Image (tube, rainbow, N blue to C red; front, top):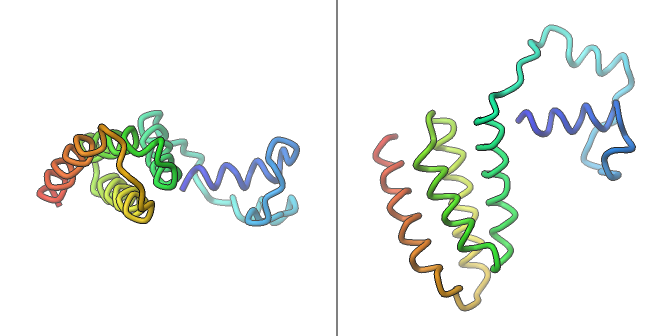
Length: 131
């Protein structure tokens, strides 16, 4: 999405800001201009940027047991606040990643995790009814 596009542009325009990342393509000025030609410069709304950043956080939190409870609460909130089918789909995918991470963790659940998972289950059911 927009985040990766901005990272590619930063890698080209300000390489000292980003760490060396082999997944980012290196474009010369001509290639970059061709890639951007004809595209409208539209920045997503602040709400959309926050939504996507929180969704991205869920992917990382899936592998960190200390963050599971908070991440499950965030996933439930994203599902409840999703305004479009694209946002709902993104939130569902990230909720699944989180649940898969919790299952793969094979650890004892944090004390508040059953409550957070119940809230997430309710949010998933409600979001599924909207699709």
